[in-house]
Amino acid sequence: GTTALELAVQVGNCGGATAMLGVVDTLALAPDRQVEMGRRAVEFCGEDVLTGMVAKGMDLSSTDEKGANLLWYAAAAGNAEGVTYLAKAGVDARSPNVDGITALLAAAAAGMDGPVQALLSAGAEVDAVTTTGNTAAILLAGAGKVDGLALLVAAGADLDVQNQQGETALMVAARAGQAAAVKLLIDAGADIYLRNSRRERAAEIAVSAGHPDLVVLFE
Image 1 (cartoon, rainbow, N blue to C red):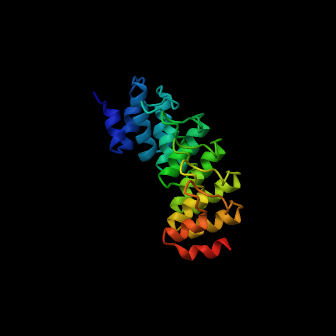
Image 2: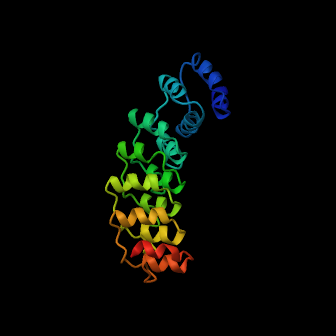
Image 3: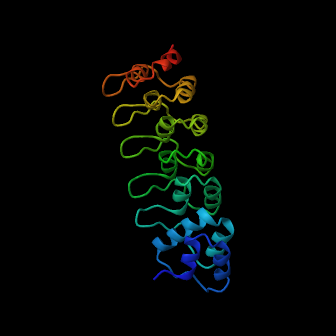
């Protein structure tokens, strides 16, 4: 069954978790349970509890049944401090889950641009793609997360990668009416002449999606 320590971490009782760590000899838990408890510790308690868990035998690089490690979950939750701590502890920022989704992609898919710099500093692959061909740049562009998008641009992201629909970050931003992202991408040199699988250019996509005001940015 669930241990008292696991329950304490699950409900955010960090003081209780710290006290329990002081009396247990070792964390004899299966990897998936270690990841779940570590994920909650990252979310609710921070470095002190994680450090205590490591001292009792937790493997921070463990993965769960989905193939995700603690850093992956920290990124998906937008926890930049957690990403930094785990990366410094040696957890792989490039490791994907069983669906091929990396921590950077998980953060971008959740609309979280906070961890982007920490992930890039930890060696995350800037142009990794999802199973549908989306890069982090495409995902953040569609969500209008210009701060994270700017970091990807500075890191040399390929802005002209096309997903399975043939759409680039610029096209996705145009479709979503994300003016700031459109401007950033054009200023960064994104190709405005590429066409998607429907033979549409980004400016045409903006118009068809109900955002004709964006056309001036392409001129």
